[in-house]
Image (tube, rainbow, N blue to C red):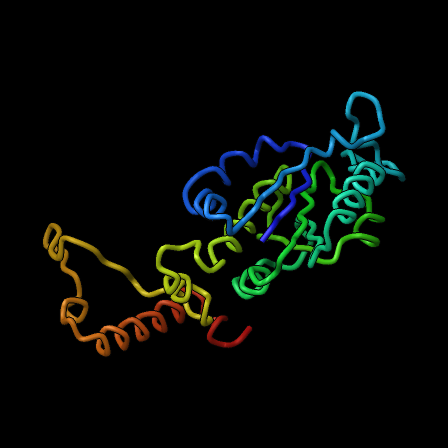
Length: 226
């Protein structure tokens, strides 16, 4: 999979993709992440990529021309399955979306900044709009890193144990059950006996029951199919 990210502050994305699982995915040749500095593609002086919004009001808007130039350049090089815009008013990012996107070959992500991007870019280029939550960040870079991480870890071969992702929270509309490791007795706090039983069927049944219980307590809407 290849993911191209358009940003006005590309340095923000250096660390998330150069460590841990994302680094492993790239070193194994399973994932390519290319971050493009929008300022390198603007026809305006001093790297200008934003301007005042028509109609007045506080905040700057990312201009359409630099974005169109870079998007069209990338599209000439390959066909994109989705051109994604990270925005607070996009569709809420969920595990099922990550699952679907992990099956794609080429994705482009546009990171908004300031008051966002010119609406004409959204209308004519963007195919998918994503929000990672009902709050506002300074830009779309951190949100893009979240999306790439959620997608990348699902690519076969990225995780050492590929079954691990299958039991993550939200994969089956349930939160993950409690997990424990050594020692079995820590300060008198003991691991549930069933987990020490060595009986896979009993362990699976316990985990499912605990997942249902935790979901009902914390996210009952998942059980209701909302």
